Image (cartoon, rainbow, N blue to C red; front, top):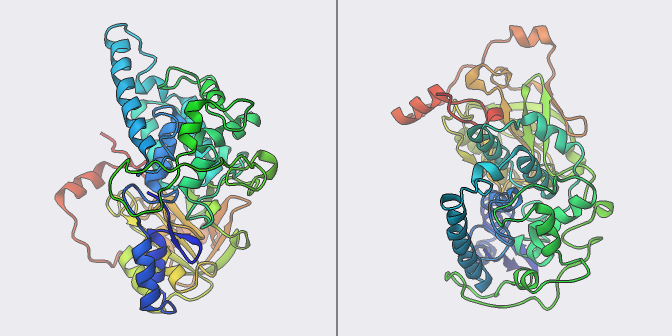
Length: 451
């Protein structure tokens, strides 16, 4: 989707949600934002979960160049569909007629390809949900790819691209103008951070595609220019491929532009990080690209809720105060069951101007539109006896992103002796979800079923 504009800055659906609960925003201002937040068809304009996964399929090699970043309204998106359809037929012949297995999804989504995709995700601070999805893909493919790999990558991959919700300066359309997903991967490749010999659905290697679609090389190909010059139309439209506006120039600035080179990275730490500690012995995930660096070290008193709904009420009614750590338990794969998306609690913290004054930790998951000091996927989850379920109001939670740690301020003996906090919420669970809960793993395994 094209980004909306209000008062000379980008706005999107999350902007409308945050402003909607902000009592300092007038009804007139809110109406203006709501009328601009979603100016047409396509997934949200920021690096939320849909666009994050769209970008990761391109990084994995399972979709074509431009797939992650061309706006839905542009004719180049329609052209991309046509190219993809042609390639589906060609690859079907290669497999069924010629016996070529190299173009099958299981062949392309190798361990090296998954590492490349996660490297890209860390470099642009994508949705934390991508961690769940890639772990689940790896489980299904029988590929050795774990939280330990993600943790290792997060310690050496810098943040080279920041898009909404991590900044309102750039949206996905701006990343496209700067060379898109392959543009970011080209900068990563210069630092030796990618495996360039992996096979892609295009029939080429990653290294070959990076070369052929570079906008900063010695020669800009016609196909690359067509993709990355595709611009938003600036007019409301719910028709896909309805406009053909072009950027007058491409963003090749790698020092202050949308996509940075390694020397001018937004941060030397990547956009995602894995934390460990006595309440997350199997790990948890934070989108560091969306966290103000002043909050990278945070300690506060726990304010505990056992549902998203109760947490939202506590934030809006003033129970949650500056300096608190909001703890939401029993929203993991087993406890939810099913890990409902939690965009409201993090948005409401911003609405109450607590975005830099509070932290939020949970065994559940967030929307890709979440930013701020929001830590999810705490494993093991409360429903599996995880220590997050032992936290009570007033406990001190210590978070240290640079040291990759998260702990409740209790010693081992105190934590072991502490009983689980009784589950107080009343939630009707369907038979289907109860069956799912009986078989599902924790988030660190991708929340897949064990059958």
